[in-house]
Image (cartoon, rainbow, N blue to C red; front, side, top):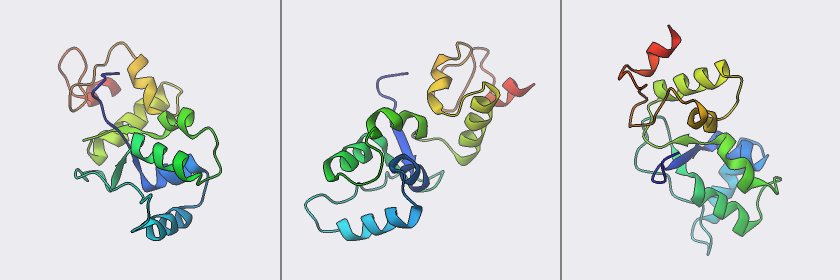
Length: 133
């Protein structure tokens, strides 16, 4: 995976990672406003809904001790997606990972046919859709 690839989480992803219900996460966000440890701000790119930097969220969960998952750092990659993907791209990544028998984004880095270069493309230069043919 490229070193500069920013991994992100949705609010639902964060709730699953922390092993809490989604309303609990909303309460944490609300209650942390103005505190010494505010919940991380969403990223500017919201093409696929409100997304948060995975490293910031993991750091916040660890620093505050919130959630029911003590393995949050090692479990985080299974819940992340690269920044800048459209909702359509995220659905396609999910489809490919399901086809590959995996449940997380990191499997894409182990599929040698693909390289991340903005929108997903394979070495032939075709879009990710061509992989389903």
